[in-house]
Image (cartoon, rainbow over all chains, first blue to last red; front, side, top):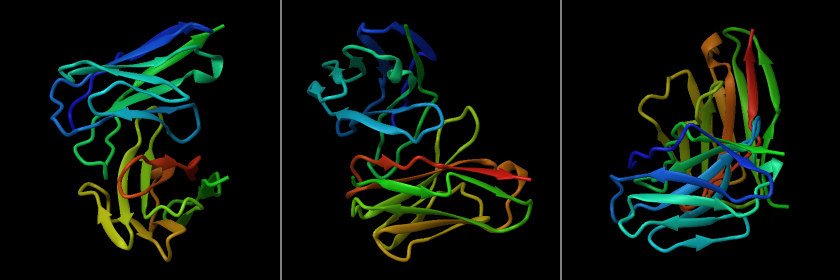
Length: 109
Length: 111
């Protein structure tokens, strides 16, 4: 897997957008970027993935830079239930996800 | 709702006593995974089944085995649990190696 670097922790005010960065400077041309999150004591939850183009779904938006060396996950209106560890993963094979340390996002009331 | 189900949610076993954790899915996905997650750590892949094809990770201890009797069910067997095997065990499924969907996990306590 391409090495990914994420901040250890971030805070966000409830109702505001949460922007979670991820660096993946060694990503190769055919490696997707996946985002998962894990709420405390639950299994990880798939959020979104992308290759080159920006992506949006009902949960979040994914912005990938043109050189693909970094990306940002955007939660447009964070709620307290979005407090979780967010993992950015760039797997060499879709068969195997290697989870890094992730970013602990805390949404504050 | 289609989902990944893990039973039990909490399992207590004794040191050295074999234990089996179960996972079932109603998604009809052909790939099933088992992960181990220790406290304050990220999930770590133990092995996966692609259809009936078993794929073990190189650093998965021999103490851990798996069975997949059919598409819907997959079992994790720990032959002789040690104190270091206490962890959350996560099952996940995917269709043809794309997005993985995780169950709620089984938390194993070894006494």
